[in-house]
Length: 249
Image (cartoon, rainbow, N blue to C red; front, side, top):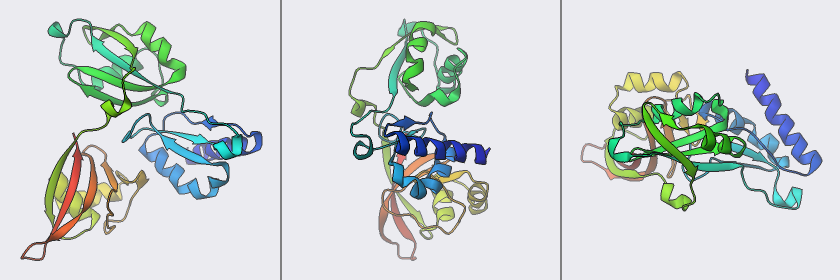
């Protein structure tokens, strides 16, 4: 599977360079993005850019090509759809899983779908432009709730992630120590998440428990959540470390 993915990525880069036009992947998950980042330096000749539709998106496309190489600019083929209950007053409580399941139930592959932001029983769905109209025309129900679907025409800044800013005391700036404290895990369980490849920093899979974080590092842990490391902030009397984080909510 890794060889197939790497070959596909290499092929897109080569075509962009050879043909002087842009090529895009589908939406990649964290594991695939980590594999891409491991190859990124050797693909730099073709020009690369990663984007998921808005700041902070976890599932992203990769674009191969650059304005300098191609002689023009081309935006990512990503659309944002708003899915909302027809009668919000009588709607069931709808979750991320409910919205995703209903869209996949239309026969759409997960690779055509990016992040989903759920706010007040409405979903803002990043999707590939090629299937956006099909979803608009075909999706009329999530669980037992009738819904409408339309293109989101608002500012993407309105969909920017929300954070809670926190000050946390840790024993040291080691990844296992920070994960244990931020997510309420034992040090051993935090280390296991790392060794099992469930932890990503800046989109790259990390397997070292002793990795130190830098300002603005984005840390994602499968099954636990995501936060931004916002820097160190001094020490306690017992020589422990204050750190600041922004937890995605």
